[in-house]
Amino acid sequence: MQKRKSIYSAGFKHGNPIPAASLIGNILASGVINGTDPETGEIGRDLRAQCEFMFMHVRNIVEEAGGGTDDILKMTVWMQDRSQRDALNKEWLKMFPDASCRPARHALQNPIASDFLIQCDILAVLARP
Image (cartoon, rainbow, N blue to C red; front, side, top):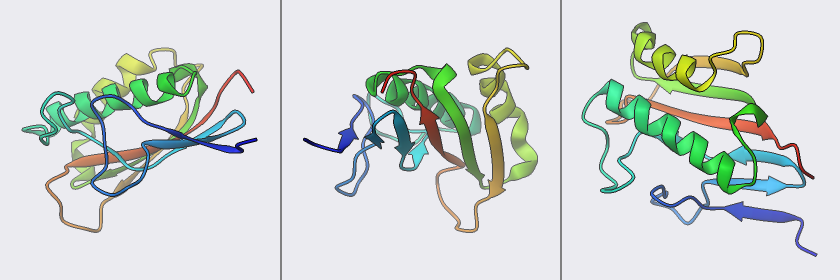
């Protein structure tokens, strides 16, 4: 019996041989999720585009694992410039509009200069075992 299951999502991949996420039982942990265009694989042109793509990948990854965005327990976000959280908050509120039912979130300054203006990972507890 396989204990751990690799989760892959169409339109999202890592450059290294790792899955988008890993599932054990009903616990889902992702690797880094960034704002790449799912059709071209290119990095989004600006922070808004990268946020849109990143949240699209978050949704697709958790759904590929058999869950939904309501199963997300925590999101950790790394930004090149934390003062630009408006773009992050716009997509956050679209995905989690109910203030009484949002996951925890931690936004950190990315210590490494990168073309990725924003990246995240998620931890989710799926409703199904």
